[in-house]
Image (cartoon, rainbow, N blue to C red; front, side, top):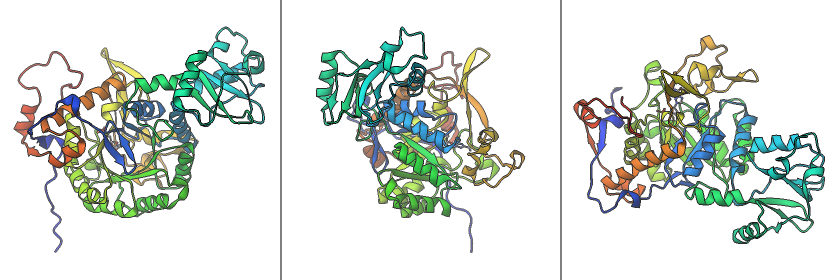
Length: 496
Ligand code: RVP
């Protein structure tokens, strides 16, 4: 007969990691891990595909720190592809399709281009694509007439250039010797084929752990759905250079999600792109994704800080158990697991990894950063940033071209009006946290301490040897600061 009761589910606050014999110190451990079959991160953190967490600016910051940003999809397909483009162009060994201008453009045009792409100058090409000059900040600085034409202001050829195939050392030497900041790359006919900038070299030194593709460009992931124009959106993102597509649905164990994954994996145009699917919370669901050919599995039904699925629908699995169950199917298949949602402190990262995750995805912990979308708000002299669920009424009311893009995450794409929508999330705010670099340092620093206590030099070591002790409500109380009045908040701890 049908017995609906299964096992007890545990979450982060139910467990602690056992200290283990250790011969490593925190600065020696290696927190690298795989996010999908072909993408490895030096910092095992992803930023959530949410409109108050990840747009291009956050994705750039995450990749620079060694993590990965997943661009949200509550905007038009064109705008999302433009965000991918922004990340891919932000820095690189060599830009292969540089932003260019023409001799007949105005300085106002150039100024707009530089602002949009956050660049300091652009090569000038003629109708055949032949390099004829360059305009940089220096040419614009003392200019007050922005109706003037590029041809009258640019530094014309001959310029310091290099041929295709130049090594990065040679390029660096050329930049240094001629004291220029940009090195156009040209072919035999003088056509512009690339651009190397000094900024990319300084960025390389500044962000040695950055997550990069084979061409030295930052990696970026982006979310798509399954309904209507989701396929077209996905292909537009692939064309823009996305590295990982995330089929991002509240219930990943559904036929339409599996079909979408299988279709993406079969399409030659997307052959170089990894496909992550989710979200799931059971072993059977993870197995279904594996069978559909997925490259990474995202786990989490209901753990999110802004999520109300577990009360609205009464559905979900406490996150540590959900990760553990999904990993039972994913691990033997060699498919990495992303533990998505529910992390409140840095200590939760190692708990997720020991449960079976390879990386974790963070929403509330990153929504307060400078790089997340949205403005600072002041309340009683304290600073906050807004943070909302993608299943919240507010997110669903965000419209572009008369369309909302977020309700289909909850399979309510057929719902005609806002008052018929059944939200599965809420809107709120989180304390302002400053730049991502500082937040990421604390999060990874906490993980390094975890690995040191557990005696694990690498994340695979931690996954293999880490052990939990289950705790009670009294144990949890003891874990937090207790029986004192906290007078100073730590950068990695605020009261509950
Ligand atoms: P958290 O880090 O606990 O804030 O959770 C973030 C996660 O919550 C996201 O990555 C996503 O999986 C999930 N989410 C986003 N919107 C909603 C919702 O409205 N229910 N849930």
